Length: 367
Ligand code: NAD
Ligand code: GLY
Image (cartoon, rainbow, N blue to C red; front, top):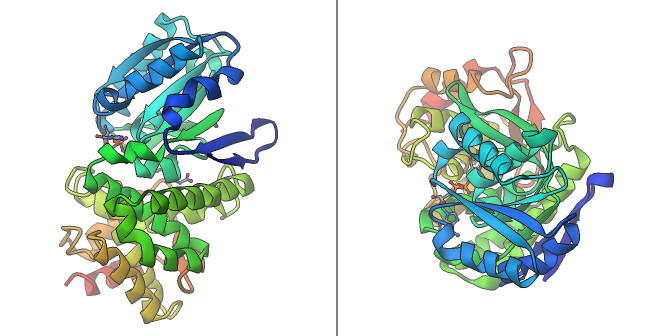
């Protein structure tokens, strides 16, 4: 088992990574609990595979528990989902000292985290991520939120978990498309500031996606260690450090909006195409070499991830796409900060490039 720490002073917490850890959750959770009682929240795809393992482990450690199984999918991260969850927690007699277990992907993690930030003015929670995206990104860092009609993740809070417990064997049941979407976020860490890790992805990405457990373990540990470092440096995204985690997200956001935030394009798939576009836009503006931009595109294409507007299934014009970007929640004083790059592993934040230039670039990229 590997143990990392997110260093946040009195709110620091461990990240445990290991095959089979789900069956040991009772032993790892017990020292955190003020009373031997917890509540598990999961979804209907995850529950049939993993709920019984978690329940047995808690029972073995003498921890009483109850479980709520919510519908799977982004729709659960909503006012209705939040109301249902918070009312269930209160009905179960949740106390401020309790730790709620979020067993699932980013949807369950974000929803449970937000519910725990507000129920009885705040209780603790444990992230047990079961998708690759959640294992390498969303379970660490304390961003929690729900979606509202005006946009995704617009209502939320920073609320750090007390423990993140990652069992990579849960990826065995994850659909291949979801695995690919999570893999885009793995590649992102190489592109941000770690060219050697990007090269590792080029060499091992296909094996990871095919099920190689050593490659999965290495990718998860390397990614969460990078994320832990970034979160420790800039927990609330005020210093242009954590913002680097949004590489590919502004372009990707336009693609997601254009495809209706639907199964046509998963978030990680949009990020993959968005990262290629960010590199190509950087190259078009003389910031990065065309060779680096091509290398990023070629790797993502080689693992069947979207790597262009066309492969993302989008043929809209630049004005339409940049119009979506104008509504990004990261807009500051009317300007959208973009994550651009001087080359692989050399990304930076800038608001020097207006959306008119982005629109012209996207028009030239439509083929
Ligand atoms: P998800 O939670 O919807 O999971 C994807 C699908 O896989 C769902 O159908 C789920 O039921 C299923 N699933 C999960 N684990 C499984 C397993 N082991 N076996 C079989 N099926 C399984 O989606 P996601 O990609 O994990 O997360 C996306 C969400 O994460 C979005 O809401 C996004 O906004 C959020 N997010 C948050 C952060 C953050 O920092 N908080 C970062 C990135 C993304
Ligand atoms: N996934 C972006 C962040 O955690 O900041």
